[in-house]
Image (cartoon, rainbow, N blue to C red; front, side, top):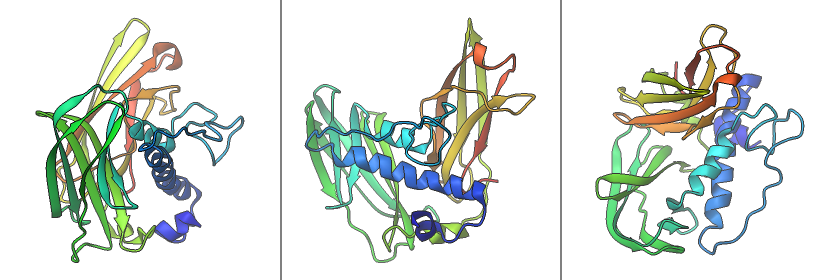
Amino acid sequence: QMVEKAFGQVNDARKFTELAQWINYDGYRGMFEGRSMYRQGLLLWMSHPAWPSMVWQTYDYFLEPGAAYFGCKKASEPIHIQWNPVFNDIEVVNYNAGNRTGLTAKAIIMNMDGSVQWHKGTTITCSEDSTVTCFRLEFPENLSPVHFIRLSLAEGDRVISENFYWRGKEEGNYKDLNSLPLIDLKNSTHAKKSGNTWDLVTTLKNTTSYPALMVRLKVVGHSTGERILPVFYSDNYISLMPGEEKAISIKLKDEDTRGEKPSVEISGFNLN
């Protein structure tokens, strides 16, 4: 029901599982972000299934981390910028990143075409084990039915936390995203083997005029195309607005490649 409300009726099992990643990412990130202000503990039932399953898993039976895992990972950064949708406040949560001064928190609200409709920034001081309310979001009248919130927290020129949300004028309704055109991302992967470890860095750049949403990287064998597991990603299931670029680091053991050179496949909600 949540998938149908968000994206409409789906008659293809593969498409359904891909769209379910949106729901998983949003829900698991929200659970961890929601308990952050008062440092409440959170118990997940369950972290992974004991057999192949479609529900309740941050990683699956085959050790593939899903969108839920990366939602948890995002929300649990040592220092984290987030949107509180109850009050529409932008908050910075400092779990264990030390006392920080002179940080710059920024928020941008964009329409589906990537055009900036509202933005604001401020400088904050953030002590360890604290939550700082930065400012309140304001939503202009001329927003598209689905729009995006891009957050960043910087220390000087270095971004130390970033976050990306999608928001419907009708809560939970993202059907208008189905009208986005299919696009191609520029990408390149550098692979290096050292001993029994492969280190890969995949750089993605959106040179189009449209956002690239829920972009997923998957490591496979170069000749067979079969998935290699387990693999550790610095990030995954990301979104790139027009002109944005991001590098993702990937680690895996050579013994898990079954003699294959690892290759990276890229897919996404509106990618060719």
